[in-house]
Image 1 (cartoon, one colour):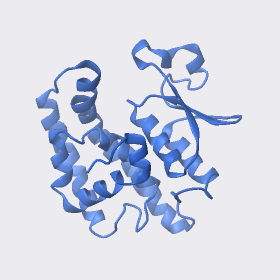
Image 2 (cartoon, rainbow, N blue to C red):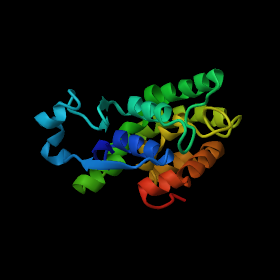
Image 3 (cartoon, rainbow, N blue to C red):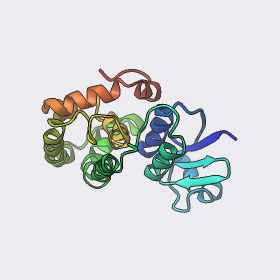
Image 4 (tube, rainbow, N blue to C red):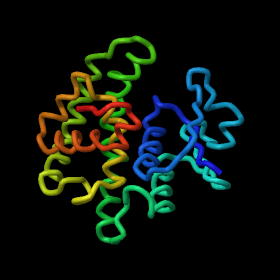
Length: 214
């Protein structure tokens, strides 16, 4: 049975799963969930994710939700395909896990409101960003990226010398900043800039996002 992903291209969590599948070169069926009509809260979706969120994921008889858990499952279950996203070395994998946790608990909170103000409001509702919110959230993101700049001055990728799930998880929310004025926060830090450029030039990112970012 084909892998099925229930989600939306406007959902960073859905994009995380799609990027992982693309990196692993795995075929899948994307079943678009209409967020505007609240489809994610309907019974058929609550059966797949009891919290009424996306994505939901099916691989045969396995049903999962929570995008980071789904991505980790794909990386382990399909270890022999595509890009190795989790190192087989337990020490290297532990470092990758650290930066995956950083993405979830430091990066995501710092960037999520920017994604809403600069991308979602404009694309979905034709509204302008609240500049006061953008300015305040930029400072939070800049503080996090200062730590990233230090890390990436020592290694090409967050987990070490190889692209991993830790890097991949950053791409969806970062994509919402590209082409906005806040993109400069990325490029003011040369190592962060190089990391982002490298990431969005990857074939998986080109496939999911349509065109290279740079």
